[in-house]
Length: 432
Image (cartoon, rainbow, N blue to C red; front, side):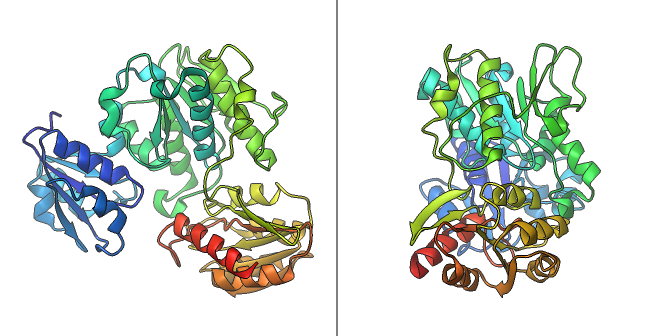
């Protein structure tokens, strides 16, 4: 759709850049733009500041049906649940087109085959960043563009993306659902793994898996699929090259802790090899990759105790991987948060068996504590993050690790995982 002169409604401004990018792009294309969000200005302050120079109308704290029925296009934030949404139903009944930021972007990318899409239950942000790091080292920053669910929006510089450039996109299950409707998949698809997640939104594991498989569903002959071993048998379109990643594929030296980060690096290096960039030892370019904030991020070391912020761990699977990154019996793990409907019993039992101590917080804290008590670890129900950090700092001894890896979303106590991670860092520095 040519946006010039159109009435565009952005549903869900959000705090991670997609809503901002879509709104800014639409207004610069000549659209009349309204941003509507059920959150108030106090929760959207950072995003609203980025819209200030532009002529964009905002409606905060509510949605109004007539905004949706009078639009030409509604751009729906991935965080918005489309299932049985009365505003979106009204828009569709009025013949209004529905889209998303990622759809606007992929429609405008000059070369689908030079797009690398990354998904999976855990590791997708790190793999996306690693691929961007490897390609940038080989090709230079002007020919590599990283975006999608990792944060921000590439829409505002899509006109600077050339046909010979590479685009790397982290794609969530919600983004893939919308791209599935367009029949779009990237030329190179990377799937790290699959484990239960977002069951509260998808309704079933089967539906969640189907959403993830959309990254492969519309590939074409001569495209490439790079698959972690747990999804190595997923069906592919005829003529698509399949590469299954095994942990024995590479001998990699990383600064990041954890066996799972070695696997993430293997996925990234495989992508570089499949598209034949660099021409040398690609693994050397990852030697200085320090990781992403809130993903096993080293915070500090005090009195021989190391502190790691893994607030982005919002699934039991990712928390299990984080705990396994350190020697058994050394970890003081902080677990718990918003209940997304995931089965937390396995994580709780593993933490109880392998950690020195477990400190639980949030809505799922009591449930995790009950299962963790079957193991040898000391279990402390703390409810709040501040209490958990104070208890862990007091109990940790030399060579121990204090790890925030909640295995749950943050929404019961924090706006997002970033705020939770920042609060952890602040509490560590205050108590240590």
